[in-house]
Image (cartoon, one colour):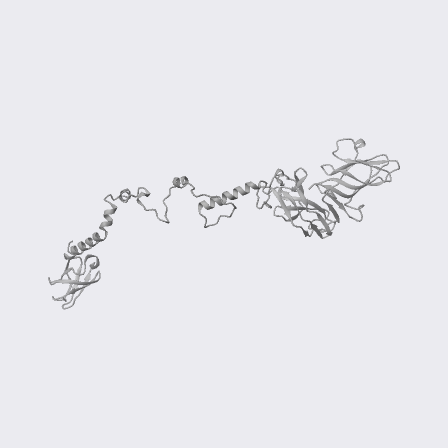
Length: 420
């Protein structure tokens, strides 16, 4: 190692302090090195405080000097220290190094330690060195099936757990018809009709009866219905609602996929056979309609009969709008039933009258009957007679009448039959 001479030093006679300028004492000198001062004398380095400050012994003997030249010489003690340190290292780790072998690669070390397989490792009580193939091939020695099925618990061995599961399977198979199953929760696909469920009943509806309590209060009874958007039966527990609608129009009620009742002015549309949903929204299953009076948010008194899917009005005077659908009309034409029936109504229940000339008659038939009203009538009324009867409503909501030769035709809506 060369002597270090970079920079200059300042020394004071009889002082052991050395101050450097442009020096780096820490990285280029050690305690015990030789310091040759500006006076040419040799001193021992006894302390290195920083790159520009050190101490020497004995105190500087020469004349005080600033910016003097100097030299730092390493001593042979470094070699001995290094040799001693190496010897200690070899004594401590030499045996370990010999075990690791002479090939300084990962493969060489593995080979020296016999770690190319688990043969070189002792299998402990906790760490087992089974391969997947060995696990799969292991025989279930000691496997037994308990006589009585029991639940698998965390303290069971694998063999004990397998035995319990086998006992459960056998017990389940012995029951055959699964008579112990009393309910099924969380099904995403309903059971089919063949399985005893309603999965195929896309038009299913039960209950959900509308009951008029007052003009501003209508109760909806408990029930359930198939809702297409969720492909399952949705139930409603029952409740009361306050009508909210426009005067002389219908409020349509829907069962939502979340099991709530929604009021809407949007008319229903058919989605499966006679079943209806809210137009363009298959998450709303139609359950019925209410006719709003001339005063908004108040509905006419009615009685809903879910068994025959009918609605009967209990209005005191059916000879007023919107219940009078035809008033002493003559000739032949058609009239709309929609002032008092929703679009889901397929049959009109009404009082039919012929206040015309004696011995005449009035005839009524659905407008899309496809036959002449003269021979294809559904309701026939003699003069001076008022009779209650039903007549199918055409798909456009109309009924055709004929009142010729002095006859007159009047129709007063009593109620209707509808699909839901």
